[in-house]
Image (cartoon, rainbow, N blue to C red):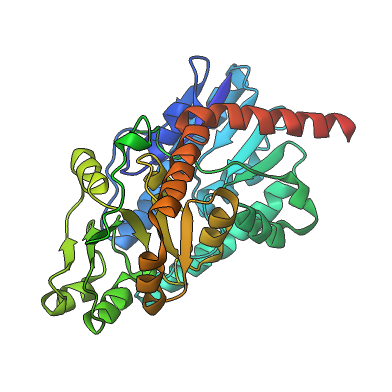
Length: 362
């Protein structure tokens, strides 16, 4: 039996999806009772601790009574993890830690940033401690994150395995179902929560002073950076903001009507490449800012075009021919076919087997 440890199973996002696709009938998903993610930062920090600590208590009693081969930690709170795993080693069980982001997220409050930095410092200490355990290894979702994590755990970098973060299952059967770009007006879509760290406000501010005639840009998602409210009235007519949580059915429609997915995030963004991967389910090419993670995906898979600033974006879009667009769209759809949620369990099994082979040699 394997255990999948997910304290945030019921929160919005991919938490539930990741757990469900990773498990099979023999696995036990260790999850708390349903509690929604709080909107207040400090409540969020406290709830993370208590949700994670509660699952560790369950884990302590569950593992000795069952033949648990692996514990796959999909998310952990730094403080509770350090506390419990300092005392309980689970030496006869393989421990797999999935690390979704390495660097600290950026916040608009000094107090929030100080708390986040402290938590990351504790988490880094925890990672170094776990890297020294013979029965533990790590999964990350990019070569960039492997390098960043390697700088933390130093000589134990060999215990880091890369599994590409999954895309949704394809929602279109073939390129015939994909809207091919119309040159009269090109529709770009930015979707997802508009947080401070993504730099959407600065991007919108630049759009206010730049005349773009043949491009429409839609921003769809809940606005958490309240500075954006102050410039809505200043935006050109071809810039639309949909300030709401986007239901899946609505998202399907607005993506289908778009030519490209636009990911104009700033250097403050330290998260993953979710929007890039989500675009591939629809066979949509992506235009992304020049963050190292996005450049890595562009170089590997060929469905992302990189731009450095807004002034580069318009010429880039206008330079893409219909044949190049088809190639980008084909590469996008092929990524979803080969790297979707249905493949995630196999990927974990393969890296687990590889780690077992390593242990036999040591």
